[in-house]
Image 1 (spheres, one colour):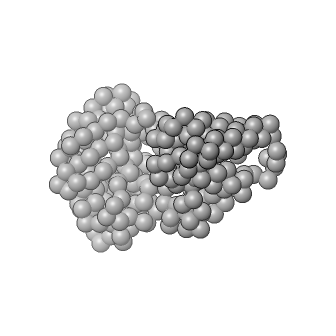
Image 2 (cartoon, rainbow, N blue to C red):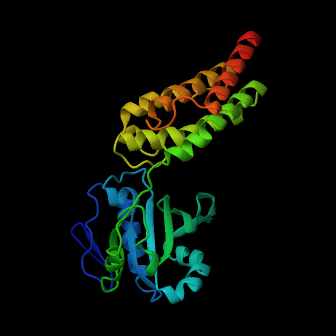
Image 3 (cartoon, rainbow, N blue to C red):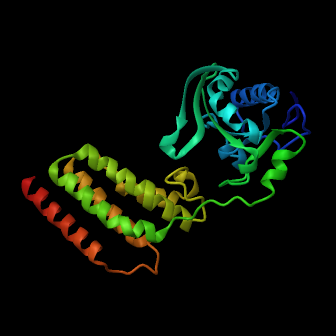
Length: 284
């Protein structure tokens, strides 16, 4: 592997996408070493970097989101060998697969010296074009990853307003019930879910940003972030109820205009929330 200026190149490739100027030195060293080692494995076709690397927003707190393109006939073998491959890249402290985020191809790694979070997603070359963002190709054999990516445009799914509406009022009722019962830790989790699954994506989409939960919301949509502060709560029934009411108000300002203003589910959930507010107020 050779480095030239801001460009990274690997064996079997010319210069690829320039590294972001903000790429920290520790990330740069890890990536350079990964290119050198992965390029020796004939089962692998290339390496691309997504996330904040591709977006040019890397900083000292960033992880590395790497896509490892694999020769299709070697996929089963490589998938079984993922941890050993990761161990060749540095001092591996921990590694686990990504079923909990719906991506079993993903190996989530923590490396030491330096301490660095690295996601390695092993993808058959034929499937590289199926993506939600355009990664920066940092190493490839004979332009094959670039050609694979060119077959299809990246598409990040927009929030499904109907999907959210069908669930939101049930979530409100459930959260109110947890507050009423005094299960406040669970209620705090429910409030986070409302932000992650509904308020964040809807607000980010309206701001023209990627609707990825609440990620980078303070940077991409600072006005929305200020609004979301009202939906956060400390440990207390009154605080949780205040935050839940703020979740209702913010959702009603963000929900799609073609959604019905009033539904039976909305009315029932709001009546129940009011009932819990009265009960908690009387108890307090």
